Amino acid sequence: MVATLEGPLRKMLAGLEPDPTGTPGGRVNYALRSGDQVLELHPFVGRTLTVRATGAKTCTVCGRSVPKFYGQGYCYPCFRDAPEASECIVRPELCRAHLGEGRDPAWEREHHVQEHIVYLSFTGGVKVGVTRSAQMPTRWIDQGAVHALPIARTPHRQLAGLIEVALKKTFADKTDWRAMLRPVVAAPEVLLAERPNVLRELALEMGAYALEEERPWSFTYPIDHLPPKVASVNLDKTPEVSGTLAAIKGQYLIWADGRVLNVRNHSGFHVEIGG
Image 1 (tube, rainbow, N blue to C red):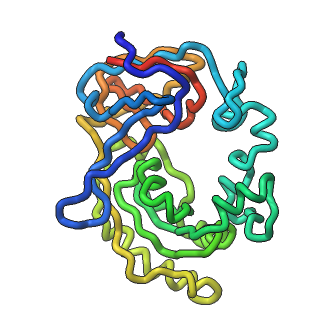
Image 2: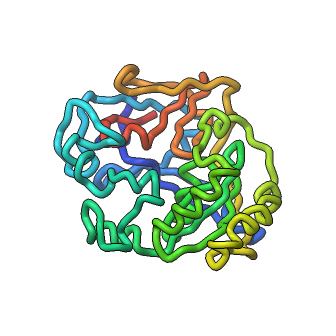
Image 3: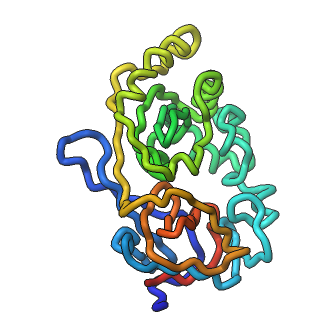
């Protein structure tokens, strides 16, 4: 292997080639960045790609070397204290930033006291989720969504979380990664058909935040083919993955033999990547 990128992993960066018809969304392209190195990944689809872990790990917040991670790429002190690892990241209804509270009130105010979107997405099934407006459409791409539909807009994170909780009675809030990595055939109308149900659910207490006229977004991914069976790879147990790259979707690299690597889940692992 000739390494073309070396250093600690971070989640894949995604760019969009706009749909020529003007439909929101488009074709997704991927890259990895480490320091000042950038590696475009979509040209590797259909070609050999090797990912090799060196054994080093560094915290994604403070950069200290660690023997193991807590949560998603954190040393223990950052997992315990950093705002990036607070519970409201995964449970937005618990956010206290709008009250001036949190692990780091200034960080929380910057990231959570801003406009948020509640959305439906289709990743193999319909799910509900929350993201900052500034993170559209990145959040949907990270999930591997083929369609997404904004359904509510709120001024801060906690309120969006409360709407999500109300809608979790009807919709899943987790992505089934195996379903997402199967061939997905669905029209954006699958989300539009759910909008009347959402509006009824929100009408009594949250109707002021509902979005009634948003257009669905649609995404296509760099896919040669999707293997019929997939198995997740852990770089702690399997430090090298090599073979023909069949597809990239969500935060997954997908090899032709069915092995898949969740890049985001390996944030902080030091790797060498090349053809």
